[in-house]
Amino acid sequence: MARMYPGTLPEHVLKNPKLSSEIKVYNTIRDKVPADYRCYYSRSWHEADGYGGEFDGEADFIVSHRENGLLFLEVKGGRVSCRESDNQWLTTDRDDFTFKITSPVTQAMKSKHHFLRRLKERLGSRYIRARHGVILPGSTRPSRALAPDAPHEIVAFGNDMAKLDQWIISRMSGVSDDREMPLGLDGEQALEEILAGHFELQAHIGCSLADDAKEIERLTSEQAWILDSLDHNRQLAITGGAGSGKTVLAIEAAVRSAEGGRRTLLTCFNVPLANHLRELCSSHPNLVVAGFHSLCGTLSEKAGLPLPKKQDEDFYRDVLPNALVEAVDLLPELRFDTIIVDEGQDFKDSWLDALKLTLSNLDTGRFYVFYDDNQRLFSHEASFVSALPQSVIPLSRNLRNTRRIHTVMSKWYEGKRSMPAGPEGEPVAIHECRSLEHALKTVADRIRTLLTSGQLKPSDIAVLDAAGSLDLGDNIAGARACRADAIGKNCVVVDTVRRFKGLSRPCVFVLGLEGLRDPENIYVATSRANVLLELAGSPDDIARIMCFGSEKRETAASRAV
Image (cartoon, rainbow, N blue to C red; front, side, top):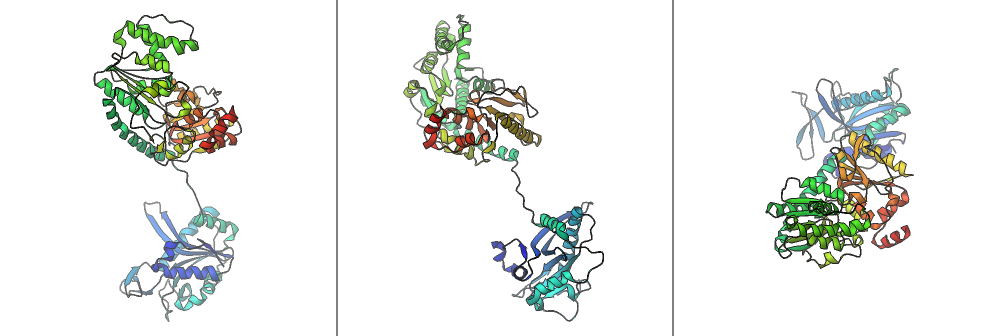
């Protein structure tokens, strides 16, 4: 049995009645031609001539043998004829319908010359033995040659089908020119690479990321209708997991309030997030955007209140919040008509109490807290948020992350059910590395590839160090690097997982995985990427983060302690 490419005919070929002649030839070659022959079925080709001309063709069958060379075959079913007036080849099927066809002799010759040129590019100027032929299984052998270029010896008719294998071998092993050389092992391998080479292209991340980002942006904008419910509630807690659009809605709510003439505060705990929010909202005069402790310090300074120089834990926990309340008592014009808190799970109850006391009117003032309902994120202080009226429309759809990223992060989520709504996205990539240094080199090489190939811009990328032990300076993979609280244009963000909380980038690399022991940090780290998440670390650390389901989280956390 000859070695066939493909090994079996596809279903669409077997079910096509117009290919019945080719199927018969395929089966005959497969079953009767010896095993040291190879046969390639239906091989299309394309070439250009260097003068702007482009040509296409297809070889029905290419038979190869290491010693006997090559045979290019064209198969034409039905009753074949050639019109005398214009030499037009025709074929007539069983239903007596006649069709124009290209000369199979010409087709076979063109395919022969094309693939010989391709082989010459690989093997040099070796003169390989090659023949061409035509098989007409639906026609009987005539008494004379079909045409000057179609003598009897190069055409097999219906009369020859019973011994087609012998005809093929005879055609390939007949009289040869002294200049002709065998195909050889190297020629056989080169031919297989040309005709049967398999390939699997990597996805162009830039294109897929752009498509996924557009879909995420569309889904997030659809949530704006939820803000209409805020008009009827002066105080409200709006809950949702990472990626559910909380920050986008918080910004939109703040902008709407400010544009309505209300003095509005948009605040959060994390300094890098506060800087990001301030940049997004810089054009609204009635809107104050500030991190909580920065707000306390700024308003205290405006009210002329002295603050202790010692900035210890008590200073941030108690002194600054108390100074905030005192400042607005001294200068009532510093109060707000609307206060919007983003990432409210990061706030202590006493801080939220202090913020609420800065409202210009406790009865008519508006106070909204957007928070992550992942129960692991809460400290024992959650009574303030719990006491607020809860939004009847929880943000239960994850919009920011692709479904594949959501699958990983959701293993570390214990709030209300989060449903992925984004695109499927690229698989979460894992890079098994021997050490932190190896992980850093792997990530840098990967970033360099994405940047130099034009798939991503530096501003699309964040590198998060979960161990907090890297000092990368101001450059990574040839691109400028910056910290999360001082994001520069066209820079790769390089920072810790905790400092990047509340922020996101299309592409996020996480390394230092040995530092990801707390479930909260794993949840944060795996939810920062919008469309491409890549983890670099030891196999054990990767398995711990990627594979533990909800039933194993407690075990993982306790084992890490």
